[in-house]
Image 1 (cartoon, rainbow, N blue to C red):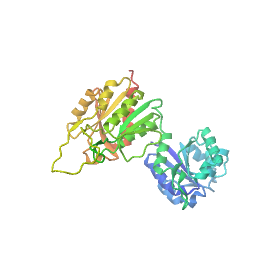
Image 2: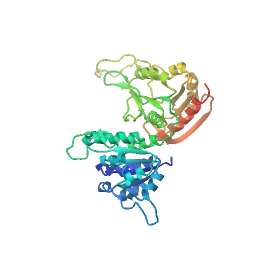
Image 3: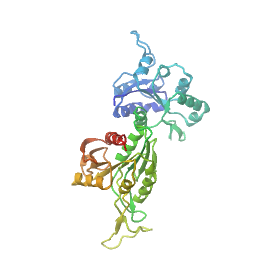
Image 4: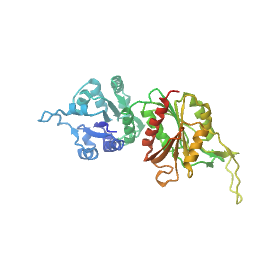
Length: 399
C-alpha cells in the first residue's frame, strides 16, 4: 500500500491503546510515524511508540532543530493522513479555532492533507454544544470523524456512554477507507456472506461452518473503493462493517427474498454465502424428544438464488462461488454456464490452510470464456481486492 499515516496521540486515557493502533495500521500496510502531546505521554511512552512504529516520536520541545528543520511543517508534508487518536475536547477546540499552540495543532494548521479525528471523552463533554460546534466546524473544512462509540469509560465507576474511542482495528479500517481510490464510486455492490440455517425445530437446524469472512472482505473492500454496499448475511460472529447496509437473514428462503428484492439496484453481485441446498420438508413447532434408534428425515430443495439471478440479470455482473472437494474445475465451469455467471471462484474448504473460518484462502477464478487463473494463498481481503478489480473490468465493457 505504501501510504503514510501520522498518528497524533492526544492527551486522553485512551492513549494507552496508541501502540496497538500503530500495530494495526502497520499490519494494514501503512507506513506510520507518531506524534505525542505532553499529556499523551502520561498514558503511554515514547519507547513504546518508537518500538512499534520504527521511527522516533515527535514530541513537544523538538519543533525546531539547529539545522533549520521545522518539525510541524515536515510532518504535515510527509503524511497522507493525520489520525488524531485519541482526540480530546481541547484538541478539537484548538484545531477548530485555527490555533497552533502545541505540535499537534501546529501540524494540522501547517497544511495536513487529510485529518481523521477519533474522539475520546466523557459523554457529557462529547454532547456539550461547544464541542459539537467545533466538530461541525472541522467537518465543514473537510475533516473526517471515526466515532466515538458507546461503551465503558476510563474513570472508575463512570456509567457507559457515547464517548469511547473506537478500537484499534476499527480505526485502521477507517484509515484504509479514507486512503483508498474510489474507483467504484456511483456503483452498487450486493454481497452475500455466511451460512444459512434450516430449522428442524426451534433448537435444531441444518447448517455449515461458513464464517462469512470472504463475503465480509468483499463488502468492506467495495465500500472502501466508494461503492454503495448491501451485505445480506446469514448467522455469523462478525461485527457489522461501518458504512455498509447490512441485511441479516437466517434461512435460504429469507436470503432468497432479500437478494431478489435488492437485485435490480445492483451493478455487481458477489454471492459468497454458503447457502443450504436442502431444508427439512417439515419444521416442528416444538422440540421433539429423543426416541428410537433411527430417525428418517425428508428434505426438499431450497431456492436456487444464483440461478434465478442469472435468469433475471440485465446489466449486472454476476459472481458466484463454488466449494468443491474434487473435480472442482469441471464442476465450477459447468455451474458458471448453467447459471449464466460472469465469473466463478472455486475454492476447496477441506484444505487445512484455507478451511472454513480461516483468514486466508486460495481461489481459482474462471471466466465465461473459459479463461482460468489460480490465485495463490493470500488474505481474504487481498483476494477480495483482486476480485473487485477483475469484476470492474467486466462492468467497463460495452453492454
